[in-house]
Image (cartoon, rainbow, N blue to C red; front, side, top):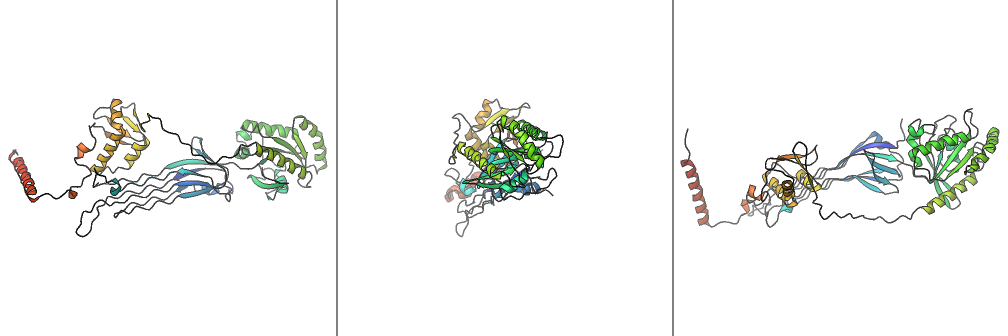
Length: 478
């Protein structure tokens, strides 16, 4: 059964925004007291947060689909809908968030670090919020905006100061068990370690973390064996330790060739050339192992490596190794730039940025893309003429109509607003003033008009009867 997972594909869906409410206040002796429709609630976000108690992505391997709650719709009486609840997903320290194309979206290091993976949709405005001096009684409300749908990839890269690398059964797990309080599974057969083990070591005043990486073999950087799955766990480490087996029973292996092969795999993987390295010759408690260590040590030191002869079983040479690693970790930490306080980067828009683009496609369709027009379309109830007119006015004020004319659009041309898979398509009819001319006194409920004098009401009724009679007289039967 799988107990450790360090790479998953996650499908997250933020909550949809609640719809606004179109309502009119009513009470005794005041049946039309004005618009009082409340706003819809905001949809919940999906947030990834580093939790030190989480060490694997196993939960997301079994349940890759996660969704936040929707916002509630607004109600009459100026009652706004309840916001959707954010969905907080705990992830291990060192989790990298990528999109499907492999681009890094976030690198989550440090307890409490968070990233909004999917943004909840905005709640729609109710007709009370849409009322203005020009639009005293809107007969419509805005719809809630759907939440984001994202397919992301989570990769775990172990956060440790020291990484132990080497062939299977070289003694990495045994070494980490005696240097720290970690209790990894240990046996005398290859690939005992199937997950990276992490331990904490104290050497004098220095406390550092050490991780053993599951056995690397030739071809690991191309996916052979277990190496490719766990090479990413080496990337964050400050120091690399080659653990070489001086008592191997395989006749075609020796410490120097093992070192060359592992170094070739690390070079092929890339990005690790600047890490300081030391060599540990393990299993010197075995007589042949001690002799082999003494034979190869001069060759390794001639290459520039610091070499330590140890025995994890007999606890030989461990103190010197532990303090040497502490010195290297301290040097690496001192060389790191000081962490700065969180900064907010403001990127102002260009002065000529209209907030949308108009492109003519090969089939003659004009496509409008932009955050505002696409959101406004999603918020529009197209079954309500008044809401459609309000959308037309907004697009006109943004400059969409003028941009269409400059792009060469003519009356009757097809215009699409939004992406190809989710666009609103209509035949464009240019207007001098969008919305108002089409719908007359849009946004004014005639029930709210001031009372007319009795004489004026009689004259209006008589005019309506005369108009109806004239239409009857003009009717010609077949």
